Structures are given as structure tokens and as C-alpha cells.
Image (tube, rainbow over all chains, first blue to last red; front, side, top):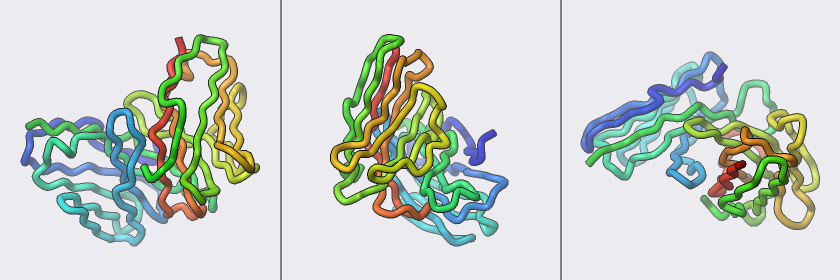
Amino acid sequence: TQLLEQSPQFLSIQEGENLTVYCNSSSVFSSLQWYRQEPGEGPVLLVTVVTGGEVKKLKRLTFQFGDARKDSSLHITAAQPGDTGLYLCAGAPPGSGNTGKLIFGQGTTLQVKP
Amino acid sequence: NAGVMQNPRHLVRRRGQEARLRCSPVKGHSHVYWYRQLPEEGLKFMVYLQKENIIDESGMPKERFSAEFPKEGPSILRIQQVVRGDSAAYFCASSPIIWGSDTQYFGPGTRLTVL
């Protein structure tokens, strides 16, 4: 059972379209992080959301943390081919104490076609 | 990827051989994490180490896998008697302090292929 469920798993869109990726859980997280991973590389942190209801923007990317801190979304406006990659949400599992370990969703593979 | 170094980047082993994966954290970071990623999947936590100590190894398989982070030198993930199911990308991450919301910097990974 995945503690963090991402949807959709795969997304193929045309350049200029908008898209939203979801990260859902039945558990409360103190924070959630979004990473982007390109083929052959390690994940790179995009953003950390901490407060319920928080919205953060990073150029054309908008991240939202649910009010109950059980879910998060990533919205990309006017997608470009350079946005292609694997998007991962991650968080410290409930009850993990201060170990710092992260659990990851299974990822959303985004392909933006020119 | 903020300076985390992993080597080798690619490693090919035959079944039964040993695999040693090395990770040098960002300078000044004393916390190291190892994750495994199977194709088309997210990362799975394996182990969390501080210098000379294993703090959490709840994600490590009980047999054949071990990890260390000595006082001097890189962190090592060791897989003995590899099997085909060990083929995956292994990522190391480091952080300066342990709170869950702090950034973990990931290395580029080691892709292990077991023939």
C-alpha cells in the first residue's frame, strides 16, 4: 500500500497546455516536498510546503498543500518541453520521529511534446 | 544536486558477486540516506546513517545488504551475492540536520545491473 498516491502516473501533453499532478494520502504530513527527476539523474527539490492551505509559486509551477495536510498538488501553466521529467512528491512518514527519512509517491512521468 | 558524489555511476555485476556503492555527502553534512529506485517507481528508503552510526535501517533487506558511514571517507552501501532483483538505481542523499522538512540533497545515483 502506497502511503503517498500520485496521479496520474503518466501524462503526455502538447506544449502550451496546462496540467495538474496530485499527491494524496490518508495520513497527515507535517510537510510535503516536490522533486523533479530527469533520466539518469537524482531528484532535485522544487519546493517544500509546510502549512495547511499554503500555496507556493515557482515561475509557471504552482504548489498547494491541502488544508488538512493530507494532500498536495502541482499545477504547471503553459507547459514546455523542458518540463518533461518525473515528478515526485515526498514526505516524512507519520510517527517516524526525527529520523529524517522520506517516503516517496510512485511518481508522475510528464512528457511535453513540442 | 548540490555536491553529493556517487560512484560508480554504472555498475555491472554477475549473480553472486559483491557490489560496493560509494557516496560522498555535501561537505559538512553528517547525515546520509540511501534510497533504491526500481524502474518507473518512486524511491524507497533503505537506511539512514550518521558518522559511525546506523540510525534507521528499517528499509534495508535483512540479508546481503549492509551500509556504513565511517569517520573518514565516503558512505558505502554493500550488497553481497547480488541477484537479478537487486538491479536498480541506488541514490544517496545528505542533509546537515535531521528534521523531516529540511532539504535532502541527492546524488546522481548508481545504476546497478545484475546479469
